[in-house]
View 1 (cartoon, rainbow, N blue to C red):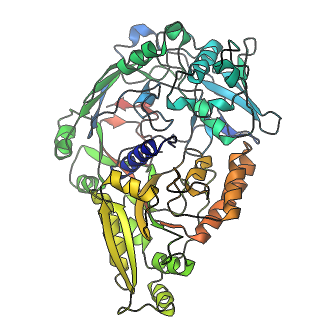
View 2: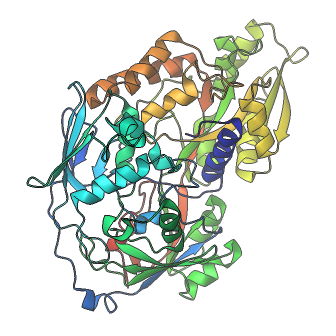
View 3: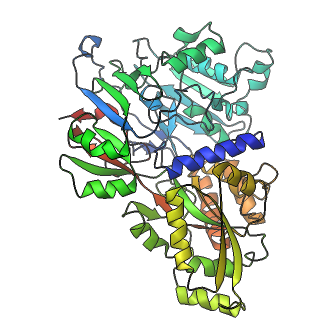
Length: 565
């Protein structure tokens, strides 16, 4: 998450919310053919590289896939200089690959590394990886161990201020390297004979996992260039990658990628991929005319298109986050858990998920996404309107003397308004009086995370890439008004300890235990009522073959396998 200044935190929160609420997809990977080591957060994939196609056939193999984009394209930024979180976009991942990527199951999945072993109980802890045999950059040059050292030295530089520096300080020798005392980072050891790289950390900290998801950089292209020159190459799309497609052009409205004949899983079936703008009211016609092949659409439009158009169909992928009703647990009016329980039990979450978004939403039971091995569904109060009424009556509230509450939320978003209307409708049978307070998004984040008073709030949040990120939102030290994100003012010493323990070990099974206990405790304390995850919906031409339905958070993860009929 974003830290360092209040303004930066607020910008990060707004961007996170916008990603979730506008139906745009985020990162996540479909299940690989993999196995997991017993004492590891690494998913290992042992397959060897298929033979790459000759560059001479690159221009003739396959056809061009055209993706319609309902919004302007973000800046091309594989270096992460303008990003708010350490995560490549779906489109950037066409070109740029890392040693590992964080799989939606919560583990690291191999990309340019294919085998690894983590020594979580060693002092100091370390990870040894084997570089993928035969991996090449798009210009045909081999990916080497020297590329690994070069990449992490760049991310550790004092003049590098991008997101990939996250966790880099946990490598041994980074401090000395930054001070100019050593020419290399002593915590990175290369063994050319074995084809391995060993990373040694200063301590056991799950934040170190993030460094392996940074895009690997080509030393042969960038050596001797300063950071500004490298940044210019990246922005122009001229930075070489090792993914299935190489950037050919990139603008605010359109982009084009061409197949990488040297891709380590074999040349893609498509010759190229183009991204073009498309207005929502033109989607059906553009698909019918064959001018685009796939585009993201809203659940409302998906529902209309699913029953009315031939030659195309609707597909879904997992949502990147969840909507929730937050309780200010320090507010005199809702600090009593029984009051929070009554409000929660009066909300038919399952019915809202089923009807409000045409079946393209699912109820949420945890702040961790359900495919993650760290996920454990919370035991939230079941819908029971009569029992909810009884709780409030027993507390002395009546229709004549209702419980008066203020609910704040970021306005100007139809998705959020729809959820709020459904919640308030469900509360009409309760002796409560709700003051709705809609604020502009930027004003809302300053209000909520600045510590201003509110009994309830409606918001949305991204699922964490790694559960260690939960600490920033739910630890009692993360106080609102002091650059913290704990808007519910949640405070439970045992829950704090479990979050600290989960972050301070790399052993997967031990971490699973800590986060399972934490989710049980968190759900029982009821600082929020999780509501729904809205799935990402796509309108796809029947010409497209290979796109997985009900995919992970990145529907283009296997785009190298797609074909056009």
